[in-house]
Length: 312
Ligand SMILES: NC(=O)c1ccc[n+]([C@@H]2O[C@H](COP(=O)([O-])OP(=O)(O)OC[C@H]3O[C@@H](n4cnc5c(N)ncnc54)[C@H](O)[C@@H]3O)[C@@H](O)[C@H]2O)c1
Image 1: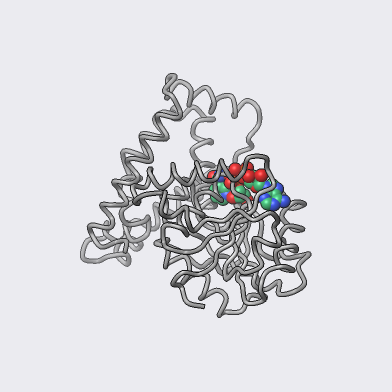
Image 2: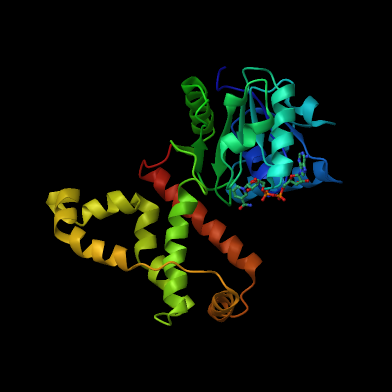
């Protein structure tokens, strides 16, 4: 399979499906979609147009010529080289959907699920034709802008399928990582969960306000993490001694902090503190305006990474 102009099937065309359709169409691929919801085709065309405009990636009109809406799931995947599944995050929906995709798609097609939480082994439980080609390809919202995709194979996935999935994502300008074990939340959401846990705990204990948690990250380490990531960034703190020096010098106190971190239970009291804290922090700012501003700043950040050679 060449990565030039492949046939891609997008199953489920909600928020994430529309973002994937935009990415594959913008890269010049033919995209066939299916979604059983009333009015799904019009909504998808509108969402793709919005995503293209947001991303500043040319005219939507020309790429929409390569978009087809199929009357059924099996017709959508029948000629696919690559299927991206984006149905509701419910196992009782995803398992039969993936079994149907597996039955109807050409045997060589890769089937990737956008699932935020399920493992490929859970997803392929009802597939029989080639269950090993079902992998997770988990994007990050706003998925038409954020480059990360987590690729999670099952133990049955051939190495060639993993390589092809990574290549397909790279070829549409994504930044895929390979996750070598099936874990709840994959990797990036586990890292976020580790931080949320401590943030929630610090708020619960009254150590700091919700607003100050956000300031601590978005005006501090968060600024650096978007540029280098927490580990490469940490190595810079060691000067010419690099990571070895940081770990020898600051590793012992860091271990004390790590062992002091708390587990939290998201009970009603804590939820109330977090909700009222965010309300106070945002003071009625319109979430739609905030999202738009976040997306605009993200675009500039991504352009900056491109300018410095950190993205193709
Ligand atoms: N929203 C996020 O932030 C996010 C981020 C990463 C991954 N994901 C994952 O992406 C997937 C989709 O999430 P979303 O936010 O786009 O949800 P969504 O509700 O916006 O879209 C789901 C779509 O699936 C369609 N659908 C329902 N049954 C179907 C069927 N049998 N066949 C085909 N389509 C069907 C629905 O009509 C709907 O359009 C989920 O697995 C979710 O975990 C979501």
